[in-house]
Every structure is written in structure tokens, then in C-alpha cells.
Amino acid sequence: MGKTMIMKIMERAAHKEVHTGERVWCDIDWSTARDFGGANCTLQFDEITENKGKVWNPERIAFTFDLQAPSHSEKVSNNQKIIREFARRQGIKHVFDINRGIGQHVLLEHGHVLPGDVILGTDSHMNLLGAVGAFATGVGNTDIAASWLNGTNWFRVPDTMKIEVTGEFPCGVSMRDFLTLLVGDLGAGGLDFLAVEFTGDAIDRATLAERITLCSMVTEMSGKIGLILPSGAVLDWLAERAGPEARVRAGAIKPDPDAVYIETRKYDVSRLEPMASCPDAPDNVKPVREIAGTRVDQVHIGSCTNGRFEDIAAAYEVLERGGFKVSPDVRTIITPATTEVMKKCAERGMIEKFLDAGIVFTNPTCSLCTAEHYGALPSGDVGCSTTNRNFIGKVGKGSHTYLLSPMTAMATAVRGVITDPRDIVC
Image 1 (tube, rainbow, N blue to C red):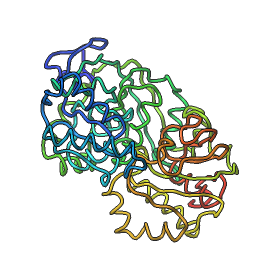
Image 2: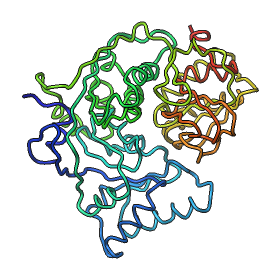
Image 3: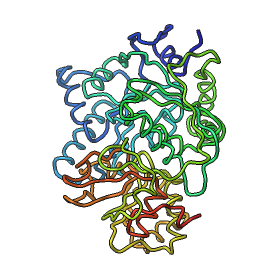
């Protein structure tokens, strides 16, 4: 019987043959923690080791300050200080502080992620690293602290669904729209503890940004990990950052031709239209045309799902075609995923145009994924965002959020009401 990608990844980490449903101990390639939750991990580690413990490998532990960067409260500042002091004490050099951006993206940019890696993190969207064939997963503080002791963690080997995506996106439509369609189709529990392999010519052509978008919301379908085999320009980018081993690893996790999948689904995006997740759940999905004209108070473009340069550039195109001006009735915020992305926007002259248009362009962070960031919504306000969750009150008690693609979000900012981007760019 052939092996799926997740089986090959876990066999490398477990040093033995594995089978779906089996529970196995795996070696960890990276164990990471954010500013949110990271302090508790360090305190728990010190508690269980009576302040005498040493981490198993300081070169394989990273801290990322991405939720509240820079800090907006004394409490957050103290938590960040706890992490910095623990890192110095333990000899942990990989501390990506408040000037770097979203943790998963920063790890990728710095060449720390290889296909086939097993990575732990305190972020429920760690699994977006499946975009380059890594098995990354969000876990609790106890799992992180325990992994720092031995460099291992245990997992159940998941079954795998295969999703084949073909065709080319029409004008005004993007990978985010397909992802939204998929979430609506499968529902919140549609990938319950499953791995999913994304394949097909649309995936082969996909940029890194598009692959990140696709894998970032597997969590919203209750999936364990979404995996894409690195190829083409994405593999070239990865090998440039992480070294030639990236190519070797990519070949090692390629699924076998006779691999067994619990289900196979096929989608053709050639006739796809802009889609939206409506309040108050990611799987409450409708075509944008059905909600067009809905008044909004705020638009946000960014997050781990759609904060790459390509995402911001797509929004910029809509702004340009719309006359470089957003509606004065809509607060519009753009947050790049990383400093590298921010610098590229600056080099292209985009930031100045955004600011002139009346847009707030922020420091790279996870941004408005929660109400803990600047820009939280007041009760009764309606927001549009490119983040991955829109549960009621997620970015402000009593507020409601529509999840849109960067193009649809910017079209909405330009017109002041939810707008099909094809009305502006096509």
C-alpha cells in the first residue's frame, strides 16, 4: 500500500513505518511560541524543571512576537520580557521580536522551514506551513514545554483527503475566493482531524502566497494539516532560503502513486466568482453578488492568510483602478505579514499611495485576527477583513465581520459598501 505525504513525513520523524490511526512519538524539528502564550510556556518549563532545566536544543526553538507588536499594555510588555529573559538564559538565539512580523511567515523567510519538517507552535494556524510541505501544528503550552525537554511529541497519524484544483481564475477572482468556497462546501467539520493534499494544475501554478492562503484555513474546517508538495518557483524560493536540502526533502515526501485517500474531491475554478464568509462563521458562505451593497464601517487587509506582498499588490490594483481614494465613511487598515513584505511595498511606492488614499498602513503583525490589536471594532459596527475567522465578537464585542479576498476588501473600501471587485477591475 502506497504512502501519503503525511505518512512519509511522520515516518521520517518517528524512525519507523506508520499506519493511519496509530499513535506515534515523533522528533520535532522546531518548537516555537508566540508572545501570546509564550510566557506561560517558559514559566511552565521552569516549574516542571524546578528552574534547573535546559532545553533540548536551543538552535531548534524560536519565539515570535507577532500578536501584539509593539506591546499595547504593561501586561503584554511584561510577558514579552519574560520570554526575552528565558531565551537569554537558555541560549536561544531565534527570538523574532516586535519588528519582524507573523511567526510562520518569518520562519519561512529566514530559511528555517524544510519540506517534511515537524513543527510545533502555540498558534492554531501553524499548519499554514503545509504550503511548503511541512507538518506544522498548533498545540497547548504543556506540549510546548514538554517538547523543550526531549525534542519529541506524540501524534495520531491522520487519514488524508485529496483535493484536486484545476483551471485558471477569472478576472477579479483569487485563491482566497476558492478557499472560501471550499470552507462553505466542506463546513466547519469537513476535515475533522484529516490531512489534506492539494493537487492539480491550479495548485502547480500557485504562488507561495496563494499556497499559504489555501493552507491557512484548514483549521477552520477542523483539519490537522493541509499539504502542498513544493514545486516550480516555490521550490526555487525555498531552496534559495533554506538550502539545497529543500529539494531533497521535497522529493522524499512525494506521495506514492498508489497512496490511499479517504476521499478525493475535484474543483474547477474557471467559472468561480468572488465569495464571502458572512457573519458569524467562516462556513456561512455566499457569493459576493448576493451581499453587494451592504454598508460597512471598517475594512482590514492582512493576517497570516492574506498579508503577503501579492495580496497587498492585488488590493493596490483595485485601489488604483478605483482612483486611489477610499470612502471617507470606511476606516481602512492594511497590515503586511512581515517586515520583508513591508519593505517591498515601500520599494514599489505603494505605501505612500495607500497613505495618500486615506489608508492606515501598520507595523507587520497578526493584526485584526482578534480584538487585542489596534483597530478593534465597537459594538454594532460591521467590518470586512481578509483574516481567517469571523466569529461574533472576535474583533470586538457586538461587532460582525465579513471575510473577503484582498481584491473584494479593497473594492469595498473604495465604494463604501460590499462591492464585487469585477465592477472595478474587469
